[in-house]
Image (tube, rainbow over all chains, first blue to last red):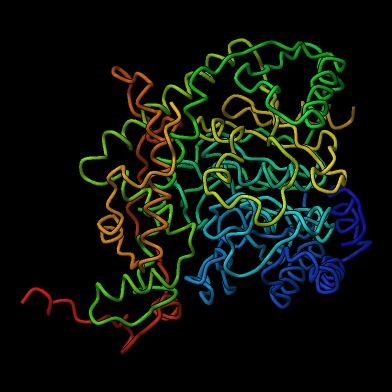
Length: 477
Length: 104
């Protein structure tokens, strides 16, 4: 796009027929073709379908429709199915698989007048925190090309941060929207579990996966969230409850708002320059009129262990479908068992294999109760801790990540990568709506470049409107 | 609670787990994942310290009831559309290796 404007203004110009969706799409495609080489946000641009969709939006505008996302390009994470285009999950397993259907969230973008624009890179099957696990390409942080964009939705975050698109869709299982939003200095929202249909999102951990928007501002993100939220008969876990519109903001300050600061997420362990940014952010919340209250989440320390049983267990089950028979890669074998084993060995990358093995072990006979059931019980306690904390506060604030974006190859030990989601995972286990928004800059530890940090806010289940209202006041501070 | 994290001696038989997962591993992978799994499960074992005796398991956090749709016929994917994504097809079907030979 290379022209920073608000989503509302862009849509208004298309609704007023000052610009066509096609013109905007052409400009965005040309810009991405020229500038994305250095960043690698996109795995594919899909020019023909993008222009066809833009023309369909123009036809609707000509017919008199007024659409909230009229002509606005929306980049799509490549684990969301888009009929007629390759949907790869960043994996060799699906490198050449063309989706025969379209995800509900993407259909709703179109219904609202948005133009699905390209497919963005991700850690393979959304497993990772840096995009380095993609088998199909490298994505760089647009603010510092030698730093990761975060993950797993790194391409979607980088595309927005580089101003290649005003909006994008990602997915978040343990932090895969919030951590890249923090690393790239933009806003990323993970809605309440069940608020957005997962139909057409290729499953990683079904009890945790949730689709959500990235944008440059809270208002932009709210418009995309409003377009995709709501019950879908095609996803039985999508919640049958009216989605409250979030994109109308009324709050001018935070008076009367109790913001919980979690004792277990103390800032003492952070680098002093990082810590100072979060202390200043909390002080800003106070200055804006909020009351800061201490809340405690005694079981949060068990969240990482809980997550690294539940998510791999669900993943090992979900990824069983990739066996070389019905879709994607097939490697010939001596018999059908040999075909399965060779196909999966060739199609999956190292992190996906690691998680399949973790999950298979956790679910195997003799370990199921000690690991999987135990983790499900721990999840009950973690969710109960949040419910109790929300009796004392309206919103919980914390860092989104403990550092700025790190260098490529910096997290070679798998567990050190898993720790990147320390602040996001407890909220995911409780299913809560949560976002990361820019809150300041800290110097890069290696070269001093100022790099963004994200403030994570979380709200009770289905309180997206409250969450975005508070975020918007903080953003305007 | 933090145990030594890289001892492969915690008894996880990675080859057996890989067999369950239908995943071929070469020797280098088997060695590496034995170390990785031992380390991960050493961290995970801290969960044993959390009392959960009277706690119900949570499968997913949003309480809901099973959903049934109306019992009406709906179009599914057309055969040719589905088969276009399959790695090997013949006569309008997915082609697979024979599966009965092993059981003879």
